[in-house]
Each structure stands twice: as C-alpha cells, then as structure tokens.
Image 1 (cartoon, rainbow, N blue to C red):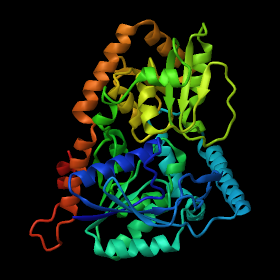
Image 2 (image 1 turned 135 degrees about the horizontal axis):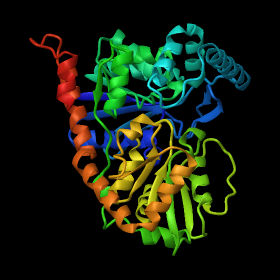
Image 3 (image 1 turned 90 degrees about the horizontal axis):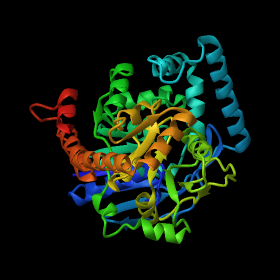
Image 4 (image 1 turned 180 degrees about the horizontal axis):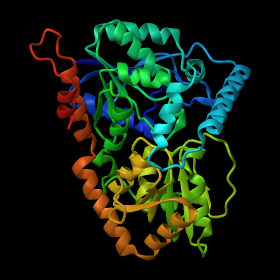
Length: 447
C-alpha cells in the first residue's frame, strides 16, 4: 500500500507532542510494511508573528532524504503574509471574538456547553474571518501543492496533519478532486477557540476519516459535525525508548547539577495555553528550597523566566528528555488544551505519577484521578498534589506503576499503528469492491 503523508513541518528530533506523534506513528507504520512518503516544508520552527500570522522560514535543505526508512521530501514555503497585514488580520479576528463574547457572554471553562458555544460562534461568524485566519496561519508553498497533486494521484491514500494549519484543507481538497481517500490527523483541541473555524470543519467533514486520540474528542466531533467520520486511535510510546538499559535519571541529575533535589518536571512548548505558569507558581508556593521545577520544550512565547526554583532547559535531545522523566519525582503539565497529552504516557513509561488539568477534558479522559495521577485546577490544587506525591513516595510509586500498566497495555505505537493500518486497508479498497465499508465498519475496524 502506498500512502503519502502531508505535514506543515516534520521534525524528528522535536520533543513537541504533535511532531513527536506524527514522527513516531510514521516510523512504526514503515516498520510494519506501509510504503510511506512524507511531503513537508523546509521549516523546523515556525515563527508566530501574531496570533493569526505565522511565518515559515527556510531552515532545512530543500531536498529528498530518508530517515528511519521514511522517505521525506522538503519544499520551501513560498509565500508569507507580511507582518503588518498579519497584525491587522489578527486584530480583526480578536475584535470579532470580543464582540461575540459581548453578545453571547463568556462561557465558563469546563461547563457542559463550553465547546458547543465555540461551535455556534464558528458557524454563525461571517466566512471572511475563517478565510483570513487560514490565510494567515499557512503554510503556503506552490511547489508543495504541485508535489501533493502528483503524490496523491499515484498513491492509494493521503493522510494530512494537522489542525489548524492550511495543509489540512489543501490536501483534502486535492484528494477530493482526484477521488482518493483522505485521512486527517487532526490533533484537535476541542476547548481551544482557535480550533473552531469553518475551514477546519470543512476539512473534517470532507475527509474519509479523522483520527482522534480520545473517545471524548470523537464524541464531540460526531455530535457537532455529523458528516464527519471520527476514528479513535489514541496515542503511543515506544517502550524501547524508555527501557532501563537506555535511560538514567542519575545521568540527567549529574549533567544539569541537580543531585539531591526533589524534581517536578514539565515537558511541552513554552506557550501560555500549556499553563506552565501554574506549574511554576505551584512549586514556588511550597515551603522549603529542595523542590525544583525543570522545564523542557521549545520557547514559543519568548517570555523571560527568572524564578529561583525553576530551570528552563529549552529543547533537548530525546535521550536527555527520557533521562529527565526518569530523574523526576512527579510530572506536571497543566495544559488547558490538548488532543491527548502524549507526555503523560512518556512519564508513565518511567513509572512516574502525573498531574494534569481537570478542565482539559481530553487529559481528564486519559488520567484516572487518584489511581495513576491527579487532575487539578489552578495553582493551589496543583501545589497540594505535588506536595502530597513528594511527601508520600509509596503513593507516587503506586500511581506510577498503575500508569505504566495502562500504557503498555493500550498505548504503544505497535497498537496504534496496527489500528491505523487497518483503517488504511478499509479506505483504500477499490470502489468496485462488492461491499465497500461504511463509516460504522471503519470505526469497528479501528477499535
């Protein structure tokens, strides 16, 4: 089977959840025999000029290469929205949002109708706002579009990622023109207003299937967009990447001069919706000087950190990240918007207790509160959970082991890739097949 994947960027060395997801899934699909080609830009780190204006710099060589058996073709982004226009576009959208909130009111996060209110706003908003948001986000590459058309024409199926970038609707539109199945790897954040635009909805409803990471997100998409075919596949880890023979917390502590400290760990992009500020304030609110917060991930918001008990290490090689999981006493990631939270699986792979945000429904559907971690809201609850786990090593170990058992049973890339492969096989069946699968059979095949 020949499959082409289209991504806005493809960075195997990245520790960011979405990029780790796409790379690890692709690597495992190739291992089990799927013939896979990646089309992507030459951008490693897009630049957020404004909320709805991203620039896609030329950082990789424009070339074809092979890595871990994956064929990768990188093409330069050929169009960037000018900065001044990007600022103008973003202000227009934000002003529109303020008018919507003044008209409809601000819905309390976590309430029953929170996501529904975003959907209602999206479908009643003038279409021009959807178009300018998609226009500003990008990426746009004429050479990439040509390559997409050629690759989709000769492949059995195309998969494209991910919300909210322009590659989704581009690849889905081309696939529809060429009458080829299209799968969207959405990595959709239901509680994020910026993921609710009609151009995104169009990509979901016109695709042959949309890969979802949790049943919670799948139920939301099915309810709000009945024409969509969401298929729950989950997320995974490679157990071998976290094997005892490879990982050493002592090595991490020695390398970064952290011997003798109690460590809380945050892994994720440094941007506000990840709510790293909650993790920082929670640690700093606790008494004593021995507890320290380690932060790892790409610096998106560029805000300086000058906290006595916080060490920000930026992006690190994956080997160091695995060592960090092993070194920590507790993993905390209070993000408000996630499609799953693959970092929780990685912490569980080293038998560590985790703390997530109860107001992020996707995370709340992954962590079983009180059994393999804690779900908290706000600084005080997060600080209390950290303090409890630090003070009670037996409880921390019990939660870590429960998370490990759940991960190795349900959330490895071997399991996830087989689900995706079965979906590909069903979707790529010739139209002349006597009994082509309907949406229900696709969901059964992936379960």
